[in-house]
Image (cartoon, rainbow, N blue to C red; front, side, top):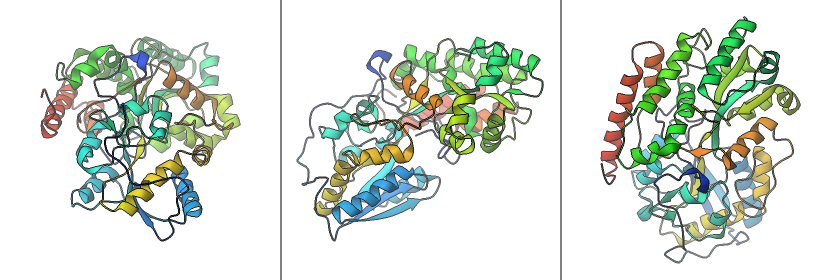
Length: 440
């Protein structure tokens, strides 16, 4: 799944997927190449679609950029777009409707491997392999986002979500620190901040909302995943009880015991995490790039650039985990007009109109040939740099279950790191078996 504050709070599954950089040691997932196997209905960004209604399935949290594209497409082509919004939990609600055999003309849905497989893409989605916009996708999303069996079934317009340590520049500088790039530095920074700033919490996590507690372990085990553990998990050559995973969980537990987190760790919320961080009462928060718009809204870009920094971090290296986001997918409906309109929308969305999407979302472009808006904050630009440099995708072929629940149990002391890892493994085995994955 796409791990964001918008979806993780309501869907307790932590399967992440992302496009891999060639230099980073690619996960074991077939990449897209060649051209589409079958001829597609006629389509173009400027096609006359008067009288055609395009039904789109989407979540209740799609970005404003999509809505801007829908409006512009209606004006340019004469088509009418009917947006069908699914409430949270978005993914399961959409898949329930999908299981009835009902199909939209277009979907804004998860590009992660495990979700894509549930759609049976070879049978139910139009193969977009070889379409010009696929080659334009940056961050290698054309190799892993919405890819199954070597074929590409989606167009990704959003940049991947990046995980890292957001920090207060003033607190870090006052204490003579550098932003931590590994776990030992994080522990040392915690001790220094506690000593020199009695009223400041070194870290804040939101055990009350639960979903945020997955981020730091996810960051910590990235080094091991990059070193080969991810491929071994995906091919059933390793288990989630691997020592590197257990240690990542134990490291989180160490930070609790050392008093590095907020005193209300068990009950804290994401909103409180954000507020306390903005006000300087918290020095550091492990979070995804999705937190940036909230910080901008509260602080403004100028103040955010002055006070907030970002650093990639894992157990022993400055490596950033990242995950893919939604993609646009075109179901097979046997309705030539509908399929043609949906494909025309992809042409339109990836053409000159895409700059509007980027500007509306205040994001870097996920397609080549477009410009990053000038008002993107420096910390978010650092996220994008990590994508092209130290970043490593976490891409798993199955689900490892309700990690949020397991983390809550570890935080309240009712579960050990070893127990959590064992629960992850049991869920992984069940999911792989249900998906009939080879080798399991």
